[in-house]
Image (cartoon, rainbow, N blue to C red; front, side, top):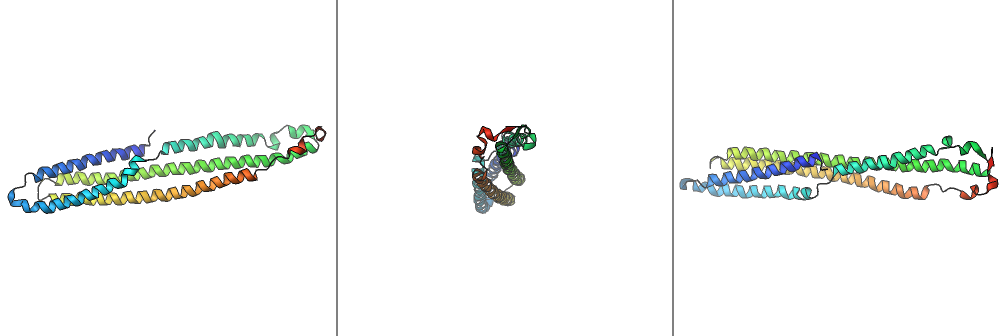
Length: 247
């Protein structure tokens, strides 16, 4: 399911493109009625329009890759929940069930085998709890990334909305050839502000992804270390029947 923030931003993109088209149609309509006496005004207006087209192109260049690769915060939140419910919680329940105070073996048996078994169980519980901690850390990391992407798209929607407002005002002002320079300036300013807001949002998201990447590297290293450090059971000390005595 697409994130509401991404849906809203896409809606703003569509609205913006529509308003830009309306603006240029309005300008072309006004210029088509310019009398010969005012023909000297057309060249600076065309120059302003060329500069505006460059601004518009810059905006779309910055957001085009974002549109193609929007991310999927909903999926990230779902995977985060799966790590918590299907891994962390399950492992935590197992760790609780195998603790010494929950096991009947502790009460029914004596001997070297039983003592070896008692010494092994706490280390295994610690290992299981470490897995649960890692699952919880991964959930937190994925949720943070999902939240960051949603915040990013909210910011992109706001940035595009600023551009839309500028375009609407410019359309209203572009009623006469005399008013066209001011209308062009207004929409160009809105484009510049929007580009700045988009850039800030992108930099903020890059900072977040760098942080998440560091977290993921740390979690990966912990998983690797857990495989090396998890205490291996001394099975040999539990194999002889003579080492087990019924109480």
